[in-house]
Length: 364
Ligand SMILES: Nc1ncnc2c1ncn2[C@@H]1O[C@H](COP(=O)(O)OP(=O)(O)O)[C@@H](O)[C@H]1O
Ligand SMILES: [Mg+2]
Image 1 (cartoon, helix red, strand yellow):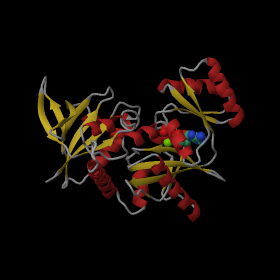
Image 2 (spheres, helix red, strand yellow; image 1 turned 135 degrees about the horizontal axis):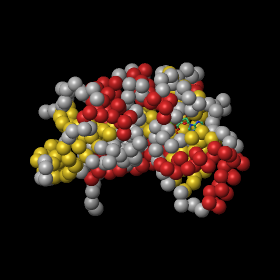
Image 3 (cartoon, protein in one colour; image 1 turned 180 degrees about the horizontal axis):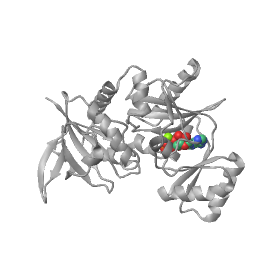
Image 4 (cartoon, helix red, strand yellow; image 1 turned 90 degrees about the horizontal axis):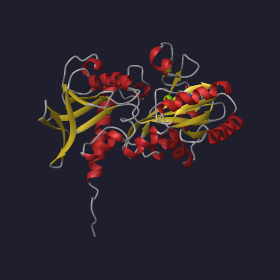
């Protein structure tokens, strides 16, 4: 019997387009002999669209998003289903076995859709509700890491609702303690959307206004001079780290343009590191993963300076595009793209099994 897999892509986030690119690659790598693949596209406005099953020769997921029928996830007699609607009534119930969310950013990587999967008892690839939410929020993630003795780049938090006086006071401390350059970021975003590098006081106000367009909470960080090293981790109870990779952005920092628009940013896998540093980074990646309660997969990103290793951020649904580091780092560690995707699905099913053994009510 084939396993019914729901591939979820698109999403209500600034990273919708990136998700479509990742999803196409994941789709092509899923073993058709073992899985029926049902495609669920989430439009930018949040509408769920069922766009078909086992479609052959899809090269453009943007096109797929144009058709489709309204649908939702539901729970019936103890099992998860995709419920597809016709014009004004339900027309089809599709029994599901596992979901693979390839959604980046808000409403996909932040625990919200994971919560929906939990509600309908559908096993899913990647971190659970808590881990996803923690890693999505840069401020909370830093606090969890710091609490576990992991070095993070120092930061201050600003909230939109704070008074001007309060904000000015915090920014005075920021400049006094960190100097310039600074990095201003929305707390809950990704792909460098809304992030600015600030070199002097004139640029600070504008950077803050930009970040507040995307989130009501923003962080202001000390600028770090160092190499950008990334480390891929997979696993549930016993996570494993791949060989690290390095990104060398074409722009002054790894902004949206350097990531997805301009060519010229370099990815080096494996990163050129001495044995000791490599070991340290892999251990730190696993420690961070465990600290954040992650399961399934994650990519832990670092800054490597002359004297320090800082964890910058953790992505609980890393990119799966053709230039993405996560699959490349696994490839370099002996796990090719196809087997990686298969392993991630297995991990989702294994976690469900462990969870199903837990009691749900009081037992003497
Ligand atoms: N404190 C910092 N010092 C130096 N560069 C930074 C700093 N924070 C972010 N950057 C640069 O900005 C990029 C995006 O920031 P990051 O925190 O990774 O956000 P995102 O979740 O959008 O990827 C990083 O890859 C790096 O190039
Ligand atoms: Mg990043």
